[in-house]
Image (cartoon, rainbow over all chains, first blue to last red):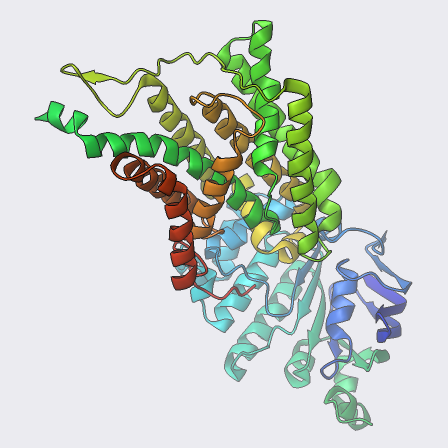
Length: 235
Length: 299
């Protein structure tokens, strides 16, 4: 369970998040939807300690996160797959995965085996540089590198970015399976609302820095009035 | 036949040039290590190495043997460089790029002044456990002495150690990740700050090895002993590509050999100039350096 309350973040004079409160229940996927510039990425970066908020609080599994360093937060079991996936292009697939295990201090050999079973394509390409992977493979590598840390909470920033619709569907299904199998708590930030809502249990909408609703995903999907917000066409 | 080759003038120049070249490569390696880790050009690298070499090698005045004195230099080199990163450089990471440069130039001046005050400008000559008389082949001198063989061996050994550490160990993977992608590394739980400090420490230890090896040259141990070497090391690093440890080594050796050949066949006054000309030509044709892979970085 991760609970964000009254969170405000500003970059200088520009307010990125304004009194945002969102709760993501344990073992569920909570989608955070919104148009470009709605503050979605800022939200995740604040959770993982990369951005210092102006006010508000974030607690995850009983730990207060505000003020902690990003690496400390990561070792608390919070994995963040950043926008653009954060795969290190100069490293091989296996080096990227090993790095994930080393950072979280989990068993490297067992972790590699587990991720290779989950993502056979990564095993095939384990000696290749990440720069040579396709977009979908990179996303799998980013997911594998996050999962090798055995996290309790997974933060995903736009996993569908730059992927073909079929590949996006594949990645979304993988996320759903990961969550179902391991009791993982997921916050899924997406512009691609349709794909995200398909696999999510709950959904919140961010609109120019304000959170609009945290409701069951099916309700949000059916709500015509909200659709204009997350499609970015609201006034 | 073999004797002829061993005493051939050009072969001798190449051997002697290599002995100086690996030291240039070592100085360049320090610069590359620090640059790769923290994007700081450490202009104080030379004086820092000089300073810790003094601290170690002057222990020989107090009856320490050469190896103990060298080990002290290297250990102090590690600690001194790591502390420099923590105290002086860390607060400058998010400032303008010129700030660390100015600070390190200031450190350069300060350390040389302190060294002159403490140890005077008169060179000292630490006794090497190796002879500097060249090996003979059928009565003629070859290009190498036991001492220069040791200098080459020590430089290559330390470079090999650094290469193994960075490329084949878990610690090396974390060090490279912290340098390449600090933010992503933090998100994976890597203690990036600590690893960057360690990177500086390793560079400081490598610099101390260079200092010890250079203090055995005819110029001896003096406050300005690394100034010329630092400039050549800087040129080597720039030619090889500031991101390439292998490039640092190779261009260091090339510069050493070319300078030796110019010394021998032309005029020693032109040797330094040619190194600078080499730098200008490389920077004009391939500004990123010869060994840097020209790829856009995606993280």
